[in-house]
Length: 438
Ligand code: SAM
Ligand code: SF4
Image (cartoon, rainbow, N blue to C red; front, side, top):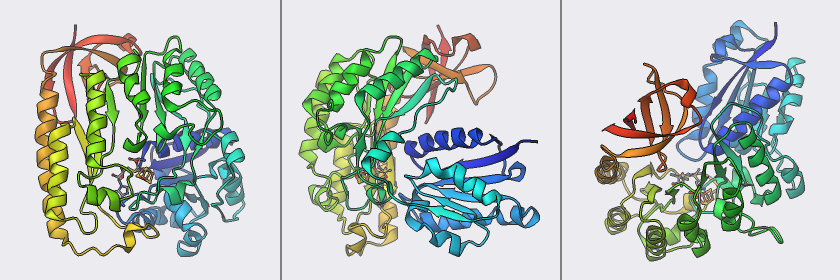
């Protein structure tokens, strides 16, 4: 009998990509993935520490596996990702039944840690690696029969937004050589991939710190020329690095989808400065105007933090005003949560949680209204949908996405997977559309 592993992934797309790498590495040492901890010889959590009481949650979550380990002491339990990076060796001390901890730069060492744990030796590796080593370790996409894939173009972040833990747990920014990225995408297309999303914490600072490297806009240009690729997306971009050259790509590049996720965080200049975001509300709006003028059909999504320390009613109203002006199709709204070690965690915060919650709900109500108005525009339209697979809805339904990254479910034959087909939108729900194949 082969060995089995169970993996749970939390957080952002970076962790999703890291988990793909974890799967490849574990399969390489004879483990097969299963869908429940009870069936596994190895249980791993790939963790996120961006918000909430992340560390406490991970410890709580690990507690669920203890009864299984009590029954089967040979079960190996491990933690990776951002909480692992932050807590390191301490986790082994706090959780006696934990066997291994691996940081964000050490995924490649997982097989070694697992083999060690099989011999009852516990281990933790959370060193940050130098640039050269990291460049050599960039995840290479293994074969999977997906229509759409993430391609990591850069890792880490040097922005140090005052609320954010990412630069501390993911390390400094490095960009992968453009030639390697293009070759990887050509390989993916040869395997049947039709859409790629270029991924990084701050993709539009791609190449800025590497001598002679392409700019992000030039990289998009190169990728747009890959024969057989149909669609191109990227995430996440920082408003301060949104150059005119990049804005113009939305008017020029035929494969670039008409959607951009452009986190604004706040509409108040005072709060933006305290956040160390490097732009004002007016700067942001100018970039949005630029995007809409080169590509009138473009739809924007964003991230917004409510309840940053010292946020006043006027600051909050400026955020609502921003939402009204931009008219986002969707927004990820977060209640500020202090992250220890960040600059903002030292700021005086005298707002009550009731007030923050009330603002949060006002923001969501506004965004829901605007989002609904935007998505309703699709009703009765026939839109090109790239078909990604069978829908979770069952009933012979497939699912795909519009250029705006909106999920559309519709009845169709499996042979359509991987093709772009015309679908008439017959119903608009909160998070997806129902369509009919034309
Ligand atoms: N690099 C991306 C960017 O700059 O937008 C995304 C980073 S983070 C993983 C995703 C979102 O989490 C951020 O855009 C921000 O809105 C939110 N976030 C980060 N730190 C937070 C905190 N301490 N409290 C609440 N929300 C936070
Ligand atoms: Fe965090 Fe700011 Fe970097 Fe995004 S750009 S990962 S919010 S520090």
